[in-house]
Image (cartoon, rainbow, N blue to C red; front, side, top):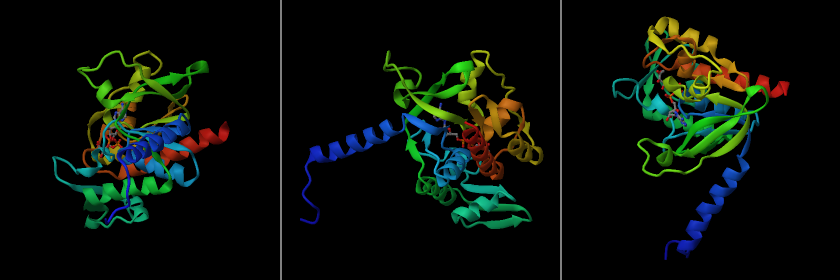
Length: 260
Ligand code: 48F
């Protein structure tokens, strides 16, 4: 026999015990990042590198969000300088198309970024949808309410399954255009979101990085969620600002953690 002798029950127990230990450990976190697209992954990598206990919650099976595909189902990713510095850090090759505009392969860039976040120590809860937030004194965000994606998805095939919650000192909304965490606060009248503006690459990328930060006590917005909150123009399929927004979100989270 080529493989060691293992029984079916051992395989099942390895999965159950490994998952339970991870979930139990991450019922309390320094930072929960909702959404594992490019901005969430960069933020997670930065925080985990600094020893911050960080969990990414992602509703899909796969991570990477829009970073697999450049645009219009074509898998070349464009990055404007200085966003390419992040590609350098994680070892993604790219070519200069014109001065200041770089092109790379989506699958290579995305898989490297996911790997880099995992290597740094980020833990991932995928197939898990954030449905709501936990609020504490003065309505400060203190965690997220989660359910399995197939349970949470509409139309509901399984009903009456209560969610569970995870605590966190800081939550980062990195859910892209949908800004799902923000929406749970908007629906209660605790904050406002303007909705993202029309496309204007030149303005959008700088503005998104500039506005990345704490948008509500305990809640940082990162990536395209920033444009949805502040009504900033969208940028279409160029990703430099997503990478640099993730970095700035991580810095903002560190500032909050250091103040506590
Ligand atoms: O959309 P996404 O890639 O967000 P991003 O990091 O980057 C935006 C760009 O991809 C692109 C763009 C700029 O170039 O215009 O759109 O801001 O990734 C968001 C991730 O969040 C997950 C979603 O599946 C995706 O992987 N997500 C969204 N809602 C939830 C969620 C939720 N409620 N719970 C968990 N994950």
